[in-house]
Length: 238
Ligand SMILES: [Zn+2]
Ligand SMILES: [Zn+2]
Image (cartoon, rainbow, N blue to C red; front, side, top):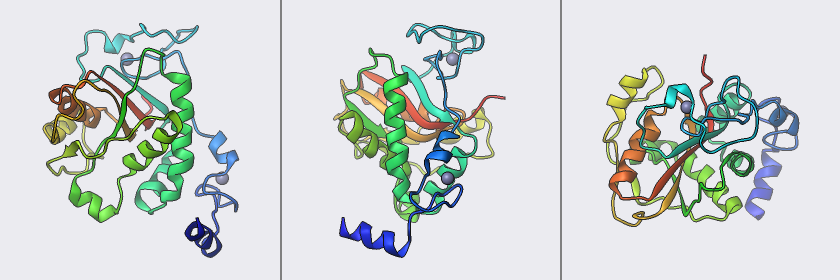
C-alpha cells in the first residue's frame, strides 16, 4: 500500500532487537527465539521432562493429571524470554503494529508443527481488552495476532462475541490465585454466535494461564464445542 511505502521512507524498518535496517524483526534475532519443542503436555503446553519420541495427543504431564481447566488444550509458540520478550514489549507498548505480520506468521508456523490433527478449529477468537484499555492503546495486540494467524491457517476471526465486561488491574505482580480472583467473571459472550464452534483462543502471552481460564469459562457459558488456547509466548517455568 502507498501509505506503508511512505511510512517506510520516513521511518525505515529496523529490527526492534538489534536495530539492523531492513525489517522490524531480522532473521538473526528471530532465530534466537526460544521455541517450545515437543514432546509437550497438551493440557498445559509445556515440554515433558525426560520424555522422548513423537508428539502424542494423550500425553498429560504430572502437574496436569487431575487438574481441572476450562481449556481442552493449550499451546504456545515460544518461551517469554529475550529476544521475544523484548519484541512483544515493543509490539504492545510502542505501537509497533507492523510486528503483527512476522509474529502472526511465526504463530501459524508453530500451529502447524505443534497442534495435533484432532485439534480442529472453526473460528479464531482473540482475548479481548476492556474497551477503556483498548481506547488507550489504540489496538488489541491479541486481535492483530489472531487476524494474521487467521490469514495463514485460513480460519475466520470473531472479535465481537467474547468481550471483557469488567476492567481489571494489571496482573504483572500477582500470583496465580490473585490473578484468578482479579480476572474471574471479567469476560462474557454477548450472543450465542459461538455455540457449537471449535474455538482457537489467542493471546500474546500466557503467564499463569488465569486470563485464558477466565476467557475459557465465558466461552463455555457460550456453549462452544471445544477451546484450544494458543499464545505467542508463555512464561518459562523455573
Ligand atoms: Zn535483529
Ligand atoms: Zn501439563
